[in-house]
Length: 203
Image (cartoon, rainbow, N blue to C red; front, side, top):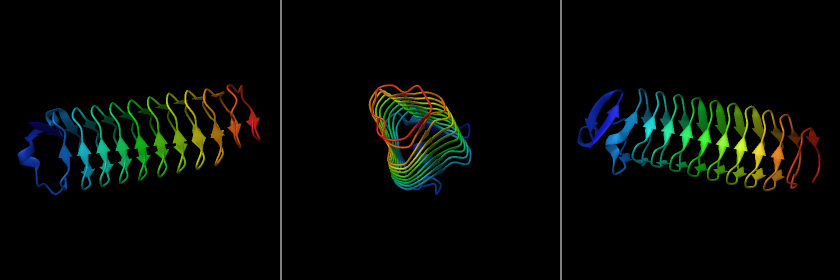
């Protein structure tokens, strides 16, 4: 079983005990795991097979990374994060402690995800996105570029959020809502469609 680190192949026996790895473990097909330059991996990390990790990545303690995950360069992953199968993470992404990301999620570049966020299956997140702590995002959600989502927001399933959208703290976005570019939501939005502009109050 081989692991590629900075372009050089090693066996698990060769890397086991290296201080940089701190006891992390690789999945059953670990020969297809590739780890870039200047990567730091914490204690108790579990990495599935066919995972690729870019340069200058920091992974905290007790992180779970599923099969087929791709992580770009300059990514920071906090402790106790769970990343599902087939997830794609761009570059310059910061994921805080306790985040759970379900399978087949796509995360763009320059993204910040706050503490304890939950991201459902098959979600698409664009570039330059900020997600506050405690947010819950349902299944099949699409989030555009330059989006700001406040704290403790709840987003339902099959929601489409355009570019340059602002969602205030504690808002609830219902299933199938469509938010056009430049929309600002101060409170709950439960209707199925929104064409744009500023929304204050429950819909």
